[in-house]
Length: 191
Length: 198
Image (cartoon, rainbow over all chains, first blue to last red; front, side, top):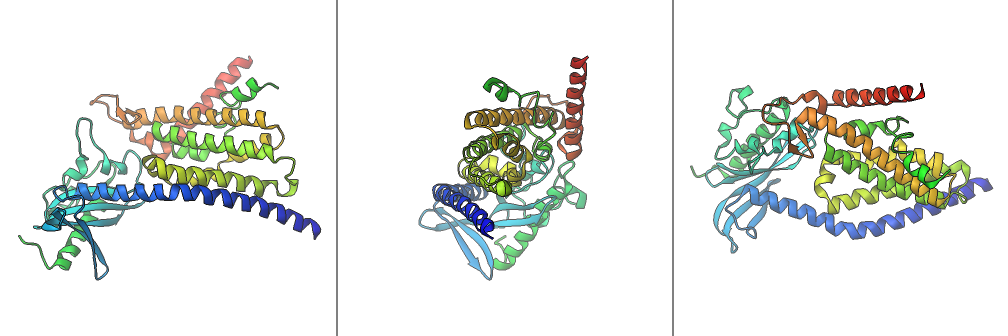
């Protein structure tokens, strides 16, 4: 009995010291991590809505749907488009894509926020080929409306990535579905 | 026993991956690119160094019966520090290593060194042992990573070097490629070893 108490006490002491040390580290890194997250989101929003002002992209939440409205000047006048996060089940992770559209519903930019796909295959949804500036797979979505978002394997004309059909399909159809929902939410785009 | 020997044994004679066959899970999983391999190796080396230091420092006060839970707490603490620091300062690396950073806790190289070396030797020797083993682990991952990234993706450190006509052998960046590459290296080192004995 006495031994159990002694061993338990030692273990408790060690874990208490470890816990204390971790809370100290956490207090240093927490603001850094939050800053990195915010920066990543801001970068993605600007890629999705390149014509919007960086201070005039405003989050909107209605009926459980979350999206962003982008304006061209900082005083929130001149609506240039909308952005939202599309989520789709990929091969080994949930792929989250930031998608931006103009007021007619045509895609102005995309950016992958999160993916843990197979390196060298599924990760090619973010691959930038040598000498290019933007990922070739996502460039295919530019200026398209949701009706035109279909993989070649599903009868559309978006080229899928060799060896990564599931990842390609996850991105394409999640954007397609997300855009459809957003169109319903907004009551249609001004075509 | 010399410091020199404790430091260099991890490079070849007791290389954790190729000679002791320890820590194979991360060696297989994150050796698909050189960048991942080096990042993983650096993170594991840091944890190994810190855990060897603390374990050898407290080795006389640790009751034998609960040494393993204590080692695990020490290791888990440093892994969490690495995880948090990486998320805050190197978000891209953190993103690509993903789940394998927290999994350093159960990397048997680290617990293995705590149990086999740091729990029995003084602080200085343990530091050299940890650093040497960590570098050995990093080297092993990098060697496997170079082969896999080069053959499977035609790149090194993310830079295409095989030319446009090179058709990458996708198998090498997929799990079977990890087993093949690692197995061939293990065989190679065993072969060298048996030749040297003759």
